[in-house]
Image 1 (cartoon, rainbow, N blue to C red):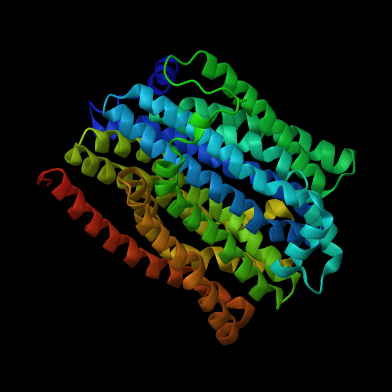
Image 2: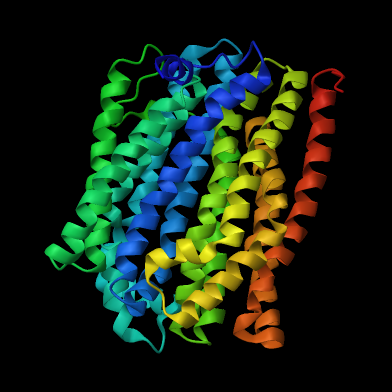
Length: 461
């Protein structure tokens, strides 16, 4: 056990040694962190679902807003990760440190956009457009849940950027532990705030705030002992912090648009499903929550792969980058096959945690099983998405995500809703995955040719 702990605790050497071993060493903690991040929201959803279908649907309507925040932070974090990794690979640690500080400052500036959510009028107008029209009694619940977002946003920002910096230095264990702490605290306070204090759905958001705060305290403690780049939580206002906003945005903005399109896609699908009733909206949310366990495996491997590829891109080592992509596909594919099979065969076991009605259980089960038919494409999309970010070609990941989340998903949702009704609408998922997968592969072939040319005709197998 102690040797296993030392194996994963030791920072990985991104430029030397076995590619497969390095990525496995980084991926296992990264996947664990992503699974715990999913568990974070899963626990909230379980307790909220015990309150009934209306609270569950109310929280489902907040997804687009929360995803929009994560879209901006993901963009800032991805741009920072790519530039920090590239500069460390070039042997420029001072520049990497300046980029890290700029990335954190940018994240804080972006988190200010959540302030209007504290205003009841703004909240009501927004959620009415997202599917609450005709069900105004759930508007106060949506407001209560998102009221805590402006307070939690700076904490999420700091953990996002800091965890990116740790990964760039080959440390994926610290981010994993920080998320484990947040999960533990959130899980303890959820039932206390929701039921004992009778705060309802707002109690789940309050528990999230407390969990994130403890996570920040842990990260600050680790940062103070970090021999490499160390980020404080509070940044004094300095003009120098905006120096790298433009190059960070050049890489991160396409990522923001890609993740933001998920929010738009969720909102569009919610509007289609709301025509069938709140039970369909609730089924969609519960199905997504269970499917998240499948997605997060690819996301975890991708989060470990991005700094690896960025570092070796800075070293102009294309052969090692290609080996990393292949290894990541094997790691993610193997893990996802096992988890996906269990979820496909026994979705009711996971859905049962939410105490759904028979009708919601049936629709959520259909959603999960139909969606998983196209999930082999998920491995390719997340792995190559990391390649796009690390090499500065994130526009291709954005194009693929826009097609999957909006340009294909919403029209297909309307089409299958008209053709097959509420029991067959879920086919919009695999068809939209297929369309975006074709774009992802084209982008990879194009970017690889450009990079090979830039690296003076480096040869790969």
